Length: 213
Image (cartoon, rainbow, N blue to C red; front, side, top):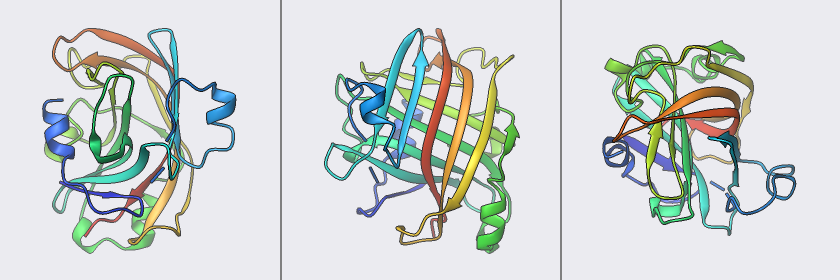
């Protein structure tokens, strides 16, 4: 697994977090303050509570890209505290899409087309393992108490859930070829350890997917 944060040094910590488990603001701000003019962000209502986090140059959060696999891969857009330092009061979200085949010989155009706007399924496998993941999306969220929730733990049932890619565009600020993608989703999140379920509604994330060598 490789991770390439936005305009920062590479971070190699994503797999460990998911197994146990750039640019954002804290969830204490009103959405009107933190989201309206944000370039990168996620927002969602989870178990009836509204969350909204942006990534900025100076607020302790960053946007990053992650990849799992070798030639058949999953690709992730990550909104995270910098250096993945999870503390109470901080949250994390990644949205992962798989499987992209023949990654080692992929063209920029094929990479772009992998994120064509439309409606997609959720998968039943973990986001870090493309061979169990299958085609479709997963969502992983770490809450303000450092508890991990995702779409594939517990029963993994996503009946009635929705995932849509709304838009995509080239991202010029990255070292490798990258695209900025906006997704909207409603889903069930399951606690990684206990299987407890929380409903996520009005989910939205704008993040970066990158070709990582």
